[in-house]
Each structure stands twice: as structure tokens, then as C-alpha cells.
Amino acid sequence: MKLKKILGIDFGGSGIKGAIVNTKTGELVTERHRIPTPSPSTPDSVAKVIKEIADFFSWDGAIGIGFPAVVLNGVALSAANIDKGWVNTNVNKHVSKITKLPAYTVNDADAAGLAEMKFGAGKNVKGTVFLLTVGTGIGSVIFSRGKLVPNTELGHVIMPNGNEAEIYASDATRKREELSWDDWAKRFDEYLNYIESLFWPDLFIIGGGVSKKQEKFFEHLTVKAKVVPAQLLNNAGIVGAAMAAKLMAKAEEEEES
Ligand code: BGC
Image (tube, rainbow, N blue to C red):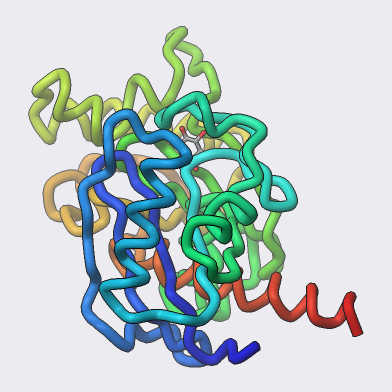
């Protein structure tokens, strides 16, 4: 299978975005194509949107999917912000059945982390890097010496104030509760401080929708570690999904040979 270019898909709470990615350079070879996430976001409705995106690009190669839940060996095991029908669905098989294309799925935050570590803000950082994607939910990724610990779900920790982190401090909560940026930033800072007290990373990278808005909240962040926005901004998920797909497709080919 040719893996130099892969269709990267970022399945988000409000939009499903895709672009063809050059997996060597991490660059988008095409514009992003975005379709609003169907509601409910069932396996069938979402797989059809992915097919629509593949058709839009007349794509006939591999697809990499950044998926907003725990994914083990292609199977979704949680569904905090998506239709519960996904739980225990083999995402790879389901999307392949509808698109007729090979599909490889990874947690969305893990995808963003892979991209940022290789091409973005985490490039050449050897210590502990903690990346958070802040959007509809809060996704987490931890890298130590460049190695990923997959499927960490630290957006769901219960904070000392009794709130679940992503319900307290996600971007969706900022919008839903009509919080000012200052008020939201204080909540997010509380969360970062809690994470810092547990993991003591050298660097925090903030990705997801809010990564484009650093001027609105970075000045309120008080953690000791350095905090930077994701360099690939909102494209990290698409690029990382394609990179992860390449790794998984290669591993599959090696197993078969
Ligand atoms: C999910 C994570 C996901 C994050 C960001 C959380 O609700 O549990 O798996 O990475 O949202 O989409």
C-alpha cells in the first residue's frame, strides 16, 4: 500500500474535518474539507460523512481517523461526547465497510500529540510533555522521552473542587455557560495546576480549538512548566491521524509478510 499520502480525518464534536496529508513532511497536500458532525453521531452517520470526505478528494488510499474516545486495536471503548452506539464498535472495520478503503483509528488527542512531537511544539523535546486538546471535551497525551503513553483520559479526572475536568473547563463549557475568557481561563488554570501537581511535565502544549486564541487566556496561566500553543493549531489532529495510520498500516504489512 502506498503510504506517503494518507487521508487524515479529525472527528470532532462539532465538525468532521479531513485533508490529504504528506506523512513525511506533515504538510497538508490539500485544503481541509469540513462537514458538520451529524447528530446523533452514530457509527453509520459518521462513517457516511467520512465517505463523503473521501469522495470529495476522489481518494482511494488509506484513511487515518483521530477518534474522540478510547481506541484499542481499532475498537472504540468509550463515548463521552459521541453517540453511545460507538462503544465496542470496531471503527476500522466499520469505516472500511462503508468507504471500501483501509481505515486506521487512533484516539484524537494521541493523534494530535504524535503530530506536535514530530513536526510542532514538541519537536526535539526530550522530557515529559503533556499535550491537552481543548474543544468539546478535553483530550490528554503524555510523552516521556518522545514515547507516547496511549489512551490517557485525563480530561475526566475529578478535580479537588469536585468537578470533572472536561465538564468544568472545556471550550464547549465556556460557550455553553457563556463564560468570559478571563473566567474560563481561571478554570482552565485550576485544571492545569492540578495536572501539574500530579505529573510535573516539563512542557504543556495546548491544542484544539482554543490553540488559535492564546492571546485570550495564556496570560492567566500560572503553572511552573512552560506552556505553548500547538504549532499545527487545529490541524494537528488531521496530520497525526495520518501519521498513526501509516505506522499501523506498516505494522500490519510486516505482520503479514
Ligand atoms: C474523550 C477522549 C478524547 C477527548 C477529546 C474526551 O471526552 O474521553 O478520549 O480524547 O474527549 O476529544
